[in-house]
Length: 315
Image (cartoon, rainbow, N blue to C red; front, top):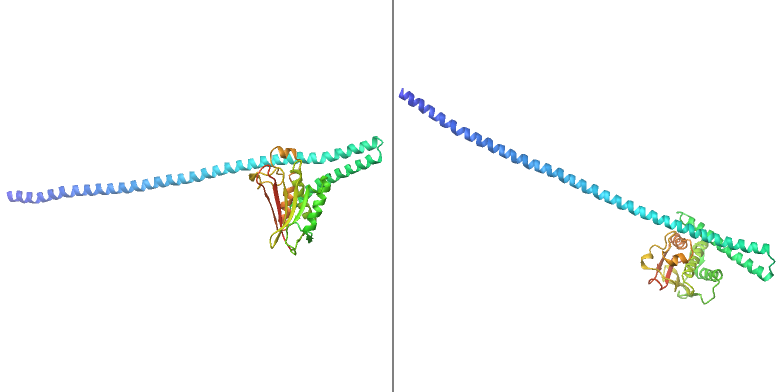
């Protein structure tokens, strides 16, 4: 029995020892596996959670930027639309004045001639005034029609060979007559080297309108003392330039890039005092582009005069 007991014990003890050594190992292994799995799950969960958070942050940032951009663009468009409406209102007011003034003047002189006996001298004076007002009215209408045609793309030019020197002097003489100015007020200078061509290919009516608009603009903004110089020069072998200098009110540097826009007039007292449609420089720029050239303005500031340059390719 003891042997059996011993044998039984000997058999039981190893069994008991083996049992007690495998359970802790299994538990520790299971615990380790669980901890590893938990670590893996936690890491994956953290990654997924942060990935979702990161995606949401990125999407939120994108939508926020788009929202801000939309609000900014909407504000810009609203401001531009308000400015455009202001320019249109100013244009309509100027056009109303430019149309009503000569019509009222013509009507007044016609009523005077109809209701009173006027001597021949006064009659001729009235006729001349009415002709001047008619010419002013015709010029305003032509300017509006020309601005409308200038805005159309693909318009064909009635091109011909034009001597820009002759055309410039004709425009200068016309400006003297239209504004009743003496020879000392409007001067001409030609700085092209002798033998250099002053011939361009273009539409003579449009080029006359461009040069005349530059002269009219310089005269209107010269104030009481008009001193305007029209200068013909050759800045390069391929281009010829018509430069119109004045000693008038000048232009602030910040306004130089805006003055060629349609209906745009420089804000301030001068703009309200000097009447105009805001179409002259826009027409000049359109004519320059159609002829493969350019126009630009230079000024040192208010009260220091300005210079407008129309450059065209020379033949």
